[in-house]
Amino acid sequence: MPLVVVAVGVLILFFLMTKLRLNGFAALLFVAVGVGLVRGIPLEKIPDVLSEGIGGQIGDTMITIGLGAMVGRVMGDSGAAQRIAGRLLDLCGPRWVQVAMVLSAMLIGVTMFYEVAFVIIVPVAFTLVRVTRTNLLWVGLPMSIALSTMHSFLPPHPGPTSVAATFHASVGLTLFYGLFIAVPAGALIALTWPRLPFVRRMNPSIPTGLVSDRVFTDEEMPGMGWSLSVALLPVVLIAGAAVTDLATSGSGPVLHFIAFIGSAPIALLLTLAVAIWAFGPRIGRSLDEVSASCRSAAQAMAMILLVIGAGGAFKQVLVDGGISDYIKNTTDGWSLSPIILAWLIPAILRVALGSATVAVVTASGVALPLLAGSGVHPEIMVLAISCGSIAFSHVNDPGFWMFKEYFNLSVIDAIKARTTYTTVLSVLGLGGVLAMESVLDALNV
Image (cartoon, rainbow, N blue to C red; front, side, top):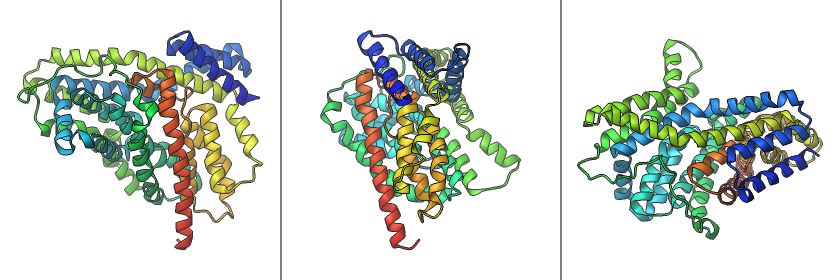
C-alpha cells in the first residue's frame, strides 16, 4: 500500500536523524532513494528524479532565500534591524511584541510568498529576541504562523490562485471571504501556540551567522526612515505588482516592467543594491565590510539550502512514485459533503506528499465535479481546498526544513511546533469555511 511506504519512510527518517544523528541532507536523500526503489522507480531514473526535485525546490527558493539573507545581514551589521526592532519595542512594549510581529507578518504576507516574507522579517525577529532576551519561538513562532496563514489561505498566492482558476471563482471574492477566516484563525493560533507548555519548554538559539551579535548605540544606527524604507522596498514592489495584476487584464511595456520589478528575485536584488549603498558608503562603511556581511550570510545559508533541496528530492520521489494518483483514485468514490471532501483530499495529499502546491492542484481536479449541482459557492470550495493543503506539515515538506533550520530546532521539536500549528490552523480554516458558506446561504448571496 503506497501510504504504508510513506509512513515507513518517515519513520526511518526520524530514526536516522534522531537516533543516529545523521545530517538532514544525507538522511533525506537516503530515504528518498529507498522509497523510490520500493515504489518501483527504475534504478537508472532515480538520480534524475532526485535532481529534478532538488532543482525544482532550490530553483524556487535559492535566489529568494539567498538574497533575503544577505539583505537581512547587511541590515543587521549596520544596525538597521536593531533600529526597527527598537522602534517596535517603543511602540508596543515587550508585552505586545508578539502582536506587533503578527500584524507585521499579516500585512506583509497578504501579497508575499511565505519564504520571501520570512527572510525579510526574520532578522527583525532575531534582533528583538537578542534585545529583549526572550525565547526565540516566543517572537519567531507568531511571525511564522501568521505568514503560513496568509500564504496558504489567500490569493494572490499560487495555491489559492490556481484553484480559483480551476473553479472559475472570483479571485477578489475569494480574497475578501478568506480574510474573514484567515485573520482571526491565524491571530488566534499565533498568539496561543508560543504559550503552550510543550512549546515553552523549547529554547533554541539563533543560528550562527544570520544576525549580528553587536549591540549598537543610538548614534551608530542609521535613521528609522532609511531602515524602514529598505525593509519595506521589496514589500512595496511585490505587493504593487500583485495588485496591478489583479486590477488589470491587459498587457504592455509598463505592465511587463511592473511585473519584472515585482517578481521576488528582482525585488530582492534591487533591495540588496539599495541596502549596500544605504548601509555602506552612505554611512561610512566600506564596500569590503558590506561584502563581508553578504559572505557571512551566504555561508550561514549553505546547509539550510541543502536540507531544503533534499526535502524537494523526497517530495519528488513520492510524486513520481504514484502516491498522488493512488490517493486521487481512492477518494473518487467517497460520499461526503462537497466542502468537507474538498478539504480532506488536499489534507491527505499533504500528509503523503508534503508539497502544498501539488496537494491543491491535484485536489482541485478531484473536487471540481463536486461543484456542479452542489449549490456551494466556488470561492468557498477554493478556500476549503486551500485550508486543507496547510495541514500536517512534516518531514516531506521542504517548508518544514526551512522552519526547522531557521529556528535551530531538532526534528522532534519542529514537528511539535510546526506540524501541530499547521494542522490546527487547517481545522479552524475548515470551520470558518463552513460558517462562511452558511452565512452566504442565509444572505442569499
